Image (tube, helix red, strand yellow):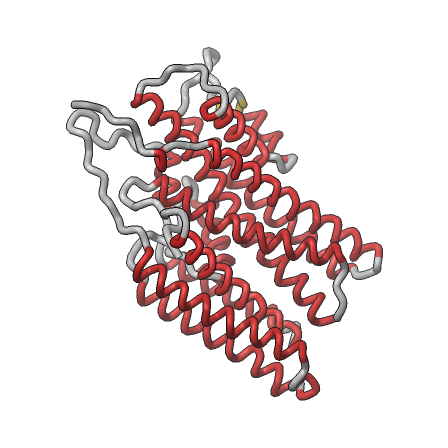
Length: 391
């Protein structure tokens, strides 16, 4: 049987390596601007704002460190042992990994691994690989990239999205906006956009039975769908918070509903019960802002229900603010934000329909090789299969 060279879509390219650096830049910039903003609020005496800004930063860091370490620990069962019998990942022992994650460097260690190995493969190749060896090397790089994209998705919805909501509430509710606040919101916005597309493309590349998302129009439409629906929803929540701070209780209820639904579906993502409960709580946060397929099943009915509620909230928010705060009726503020919410909702839902009707990659089940079969499933492969599948 003649073995052909894998198509370029199956290779970790120089462009993908450069985009990884771009993702690292956005990640660092998002955290740095938020910490600077928290210090600014503290100096100005806005202790609640400073505290909430830091809580979102530290909450996202803590959760991603927990999952990063747990995944490293699981991966140790799939790699070669050192001569001393101690499991390692890229030369790092269990003790080294604990120290790295205690100091919040888990994601950075993953970026370093991916960039270092990717550089050796795509920029300075020193080995003459066979086709099968080359395929394995690139598959390993994509597995590392997918793990990183999943952690970045967690960080996005635990830090960037709530941060954007908080800063919009502060700016719109109190008037005026500093340069640092603009930078914070900009980094949060672009971090959200980046993590959504990067996660989507890495996920579809890592699942053998699902076609990869093509570049160009499909990616642009998907990005518009997600950004428009998420950001219009964030603006709606902002208006409701301006109307009453007790809206935070309603958001907590929505998180509980999403977490409970995930629990009812009995997700099976983590290797331990306690981690699974934390995972479900994180998915509850994600579902508060956008829809994702929790178990990779047909979810047409669930999506219809979810986006019907989404449309109701986005219509009700500006109407309630206009009715309960008559002084804002006809104001430039309410008209502008209301237009952004309604326009974003309509555009987002139109892009959703276009994407899933015309541009959504169809499943393509991989045939097992007559000799090799599908091979033994690794912990990394199980993670991808049991994670959020689409949305």
